[in-house]
Length: 431
Image 1 (tube, helix red, strand yellow):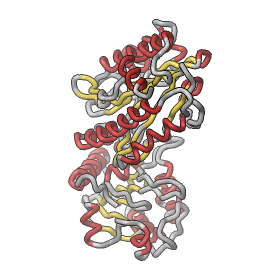
Image 2 (cartoon, one colour):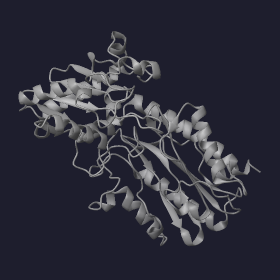
Image 3 (spheres, helix red, strand yellow):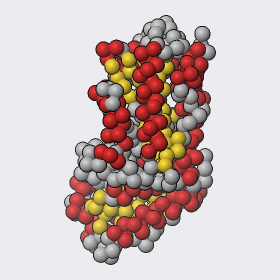
Image 4 (tube, one colour):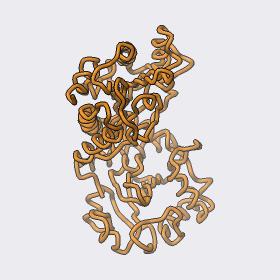
């Protein structure tokens, strides 16, 4: 299936051309080569989400697919051979027809191999399942061709892609020495967002903001975290969006647990509740956090700390621009994370800021991006200072999404209220 919202075929074709030209430029000594990217597999009890780099290059959401790009620029999409079974189970499933080729915006669609059992490909596929890809790899490696793919040497990067490559290596022993990793090239491309991507991020952020505003109206003493949680996700579903990550609704001491997801405790009078959620809209993710007073009004202590977190965010957003780092211990005066920590240190509260100031955002909530390099024009990041004082049952986090432009940082989520008065007005509407 292909993204039905926008006709982005031209953009995907341009991205593939950019990737190919970049690889060829960096490896001009290679007379021949093949770029190969793998889609993710379906998993029982999970809504399928396509592997992000594969989606970025194709717009194709068909599980188990393989993209092959030749040195001459021809792109071929290989799909599992279900013998027509998948088309009976899944609306819009791709086959080798001219219509599917046109929809996918590639030069050709072929089958991965022989007919498989059922309508989905298994991660531990057989040799016959990938027969045609294996034949292609055998021919290319015999001819001295380099296979460019996503194969970083990190502990958790591109796990599925690397599993597939290892599996294929068991059928094509020469493959292992022929593989060259291009994950850094994809990360560089994906980290600079186009205007079309910003539009999709805006949609995800708008939906997330609606979820927050609905959640704020649900917050009141004797209600539960689960009711707030359900309200957020009802709004996402009604807007035809999915979850970017498991929603966090933590009240009281739970607000001090960064990735609290039980979301099942009662909301107690005069406590705070941290709501950290994000909608995924046509694969693009938002990530917004607000902290609400359960009783509709902050206590003096809560207000003091909340305003400090808000001031820290405003300070960091003001200085964020190309050339600054999200985190760089060797250049603390140009590192947003270190500057945020120094901000809290002036109030002797830096020990209660226990996470980083932000991360890259895009097709993944924690999107690809090189933290060892300074921010660039086109990056989208979060800025999310927080203070967590378990001994006082106070956790406060404020998180917004920012687009790095030539002159600084533009807040994409500025429409979501966050001042003390605005937050109190939102929650007071419940009473």
